[in-house]
Amino acid sequence: MSSAQDTHARNPIIFADVPDMSIVRVADAYYMSSTTMHMMPGVPIMKSNDLVNWRLVSYAYDTLANIDELNLTNGKSAYGRGSWASSIRYHQGVYYVSTFAQTTGRTYIYSTDDIEAGKWKVVSFSPAYHDHSLFFDDDGKTYMLYGSGTIKLVELNADASGKKPGASETVIISNASAPAGNNIGLPAEGSQLFKVNGKYYLFNIAWPREGMRTVIVHRADKITGPYEGRVVLQDKGVAQGGVIDSPDGSWYAYLFRDYGAVGRIPYLVPVSWSEGWPVLGDDGKVPDILALPPGQGYIPGIVAPDEFSRKKGDRMLPLAWQWNHHPDNKHWSLSARPGHLRLTTARIDTSFLLARNTLTQRTIGPQCIAETFIDVTHMKEGDFAGLALLQSKYGQVGVRKGPNGTKHIVMVTAESGRPVEIASVPFVKNTIYLKTQCDFTERKDIASFFYSIDGITWTPIGSTLRMAYTIPHFMGYRFALFNYASQYTGGFVDFDFFRINTPK
Image: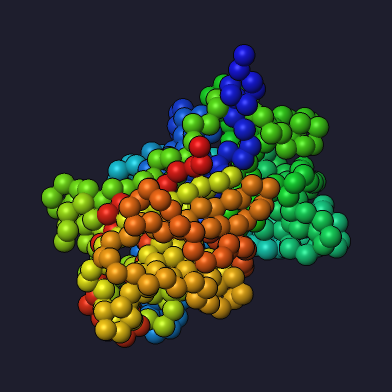
């Protein structure tokens, strides 16, 4: 007999770093945007037909702005910044995705009539409207609501092509945190505005000191207010997001939960309506089981293996891949050696975190494994290449080229906040298999590293990495393929495959 776990969806809906979600339904299809900060391409778009099983279908942009911080040049970076919370909307046949970037001080609005295969148009303007919600009203007017603690409203051009000339920024809620009490650590933010049965509903989160992330809803009869607010959910720290309805009339809140090193993971919470207010959860609690179809896993919809085999001239990477900051497109290739990803060094780098052309994918919970096979024949002295877990307190396993042609398999940990080479094993061959395994079960947050000569017998190397979610990066750990130089440029390595799986 099948259990409820086999026949119904379970929370979290996605056990991976997909924070600051915004969802829109068009007919029977749902589209979700999310934050990716310093990763490129940016603002991922995911699609689902059941709110449970999601797959990446697009990105709003390939690059954000040509500046040092986003290019990892001149010692600068955009870790934890880049573009933040997005808002996705559908209006008169056009999809809109807006976001903002403190790195550039601007607000961006991307639009397309084909969200899965079309080209995106972009307009941008200053300032960067924090955690804004794009909103198309029934009377033809277009707005952004935004802010932290104090929520403001500004009118845009009707087609969202920029701020309406002469439009002023108006305070509509002076203290949006108030329903959660007076002892607030994180003021109300994460605005998402909806209109249901003629009323306006504004979703925010606040974080009381000594408490947890809390969902607050304000409602009003006019977009300008006055607004009345109340706490609608305070459980497990699941908060920040909005509501979505299904074709059959059911309602759900989409929210996320801080869950240690894997990142901020999405949950769905059933919603009913009472006296004009959304009521979230089952008796105020986030359920483990949902009356939705079961999840089919995150491979290849969210993360994806890659054998790096392409048709001639195909330079595309699966959407699961994102570069750490803007890539240097002249120095990576899928055609230089067919069936391989080639990463060539083009400059001297002082650290892994400042190296360009590091290619990444999300880790997934509760456990996951990644493997790669690498040819290091053409490395130069001082080069270091391999497989990593990227965050501020990162871990690496790979090959380091030394003087006189010597090579070592090394494991590096930055768990202490600075990189330390924990293990070094002499190596005379030119190809090697590398593997890392993550365990996020009950926030265990540990990872182990391995190498193999034949891909069958694996040898552990170094120490267990105690992973930690750090605010400087503001992102869950990512698997990363890397190659960087410390002495000479022009060396290259070839990755034969990247395989990601969950333990059997």
